[in-house]
Image (cartoon, rainbow, N blue to C red):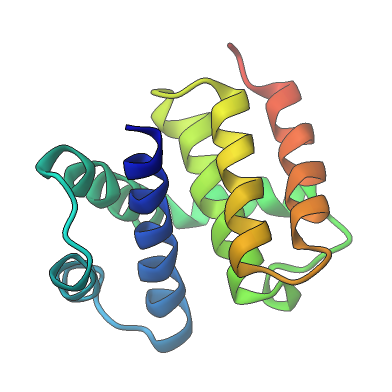
Length: 136
């Protein structure tokens, strides 16, 4: 189940990356990616919840990023780092369905896989601050 969930998060990150960098519609991107990477119904649904949750709460999530990483204007973050943070902050502060540690660990794994050499450390640091304010 863990690796399926990780695939669902990776798919959500890919969708968010495309939505953010090219401006495609979330529904179209999600459908296209799910056609290429079939997931179980449960994990496809999980990926969709992540994508719609992040896109639907993007302004609120970006406010959180601004407050927890004030030295890094959102527009200056790499598209990968920005969307990993959005995904994890959605899971930690909005969705509340996974333990904070799981959300952080998954985000760090995504950063190691898709980000730059410094991404994992950066994501972990920002999310450590976010988790200190999470009420669980």
